[in-house]
Image 1 (cartoon, rainbow, N blue to C red):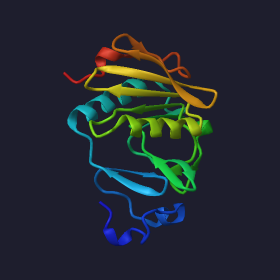
Image 2 (tube, rainbow, N blue to C red; image 1 turned 180 degrees about the vertical axis):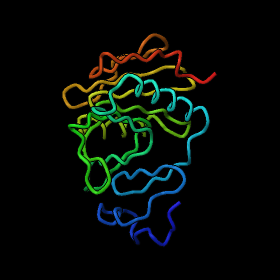
Image 3 (cartoon, one colour; image 1 turned 180 degrees about the horizontal axis):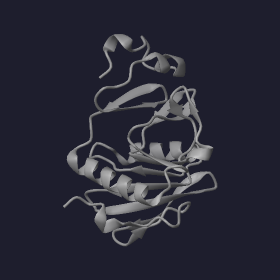
Length: 188
């Protein structure tokens, strides 16, 4: 966890201040409108789902062309006010990925979120709004409790729910050859 001495004196942090801060050791950090939001590490069910999805995607994608990151990267949405998200999984085409200052400043072609019980609907709507604002074409919201996957697609600059699936195959719009069996992502 960041030492408190490294935090700026105001409630919000600028992009420049954020770049000078040490990385978080435990948990995940997002910044929303300049406010740092620390989240605890994932619980087992969450971690298993992310791992299974990550492996299923990586097996079917060429890693010389596409990168699959699982909760490891900061995705800068905007610098003012600073907003940076950490998708549970981000799938990026390397040729269009923009890295600056050690963070990604371009939209993934697919973002996956596995909400924890603490994630409110409002928080997910804010995150979807942020993803839509940078042009993320597709987001999957994977609900461990309901055992469903909501597929959100970008239309006219906004992410809109396209479908809710409880079974069958997930096929990312921009990677139609990729097929993920929904039944295989749930921990036993």
